[in-house]
Length: 83
Image 1 (tube, one colour):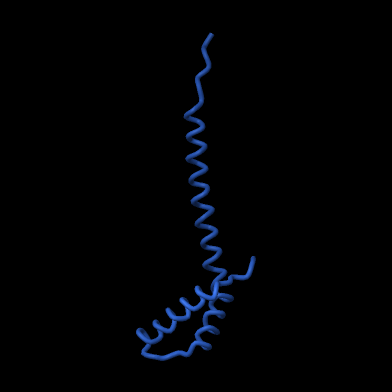
Image 2 (image 1 turned 45 degrees about the vertical axis):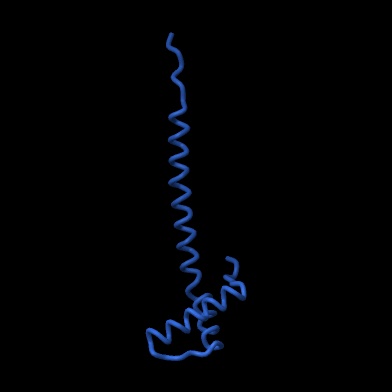
């Protein structure tokens, strides 16, 4: 699996959301550097679980569409003439 990475803008947005969560939900202030370390930890240690679930969801959606596609092809079949 490739390493999960974020653009600078994405990382800044995520860091801001984590800091806001700590402030609003936990009544604690957390600096930018500790927040980035926390994000790196979650990305490395927990991110693969979310990533794998996303792959399973994508696979299930693809398989569902493939079944629909197979059914559509079956409906296109023509009955050969008898006799």
